[in-house]
Image (cartoon, rainbow, N blue to C red):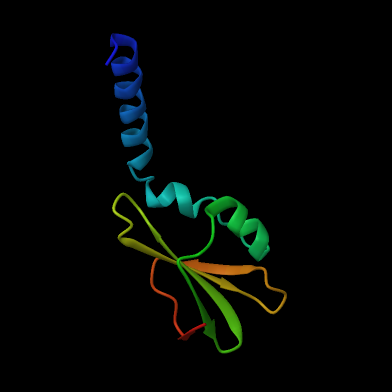
Length: 95
């Protein structure tokens, strides 16, 4: 293996490792603002880990934080816009 290839491989490994470090929950939560549509939310956070139905309203469940160990529930109103968030699991039944 050439010296340049080894250096490039090492750099790629370091970049991959850096990408794996979690983002602080507060930084993720700050991206969620009331009034966002479901599409806008998914553009900011990606697809939810799961979706729930809470008395006819959607709730998107995300696992955030360094080890994906912080739950984030994003509840939507009748117009499918963000109504509120909670650092908890969604209530309701799984879709």
